[in-house]
Length: 210
Image 1 (cartoon, helix red, strand yellow):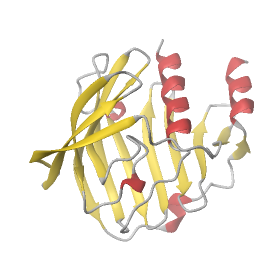
Image 2 (spheres, rainbow, N blue to C red):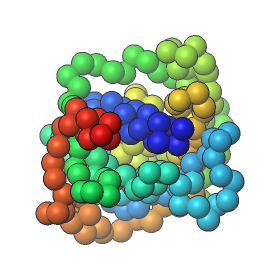
Image 3 (cartoon, one colour):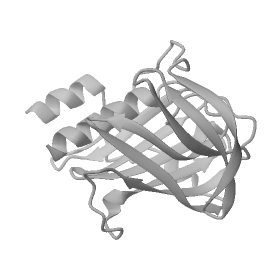
């Protein structure tokens, strides 16, 4: 069950991350989100309840912690090239994502609404988001001073999503920004280590079947 959920989230990340997003500014630093769902462990000391995002101009890295291990997503935004890094025990792999050449911004409809909420000490704007695939409308929040290109969620958001939800494997998963640390990051954070083997998504699926 946990393995199936983790693979489902991984596939969601691979597809959601495939379309480049447009941003008007750059940001460099670390963003920490809490992650919760009806089935998650409420123990806040558990790493699985967090997502870490590193942003450096045109580079993006997202660290996710799952029941089957840590997953690192890295992307060169202008080139639309991305990989998922995983240590699956027998080997370390960098899974190539498939670039999406089709427009993918029609799923969500947005309506600006009044009001703001504080997340990580910053005021984030309220926005009404309708997921047309699920016929569901949710109030979410975003920071207009940080580009949406540093997020892989909610295509078309006018800024960085800081409080949002998506439906996966029968449950709503909610992300909430809890910390922002601006500062210079080491470029090595966004590279593929030499001990990782680059493979395709199909090769990864065959590997975990075995």
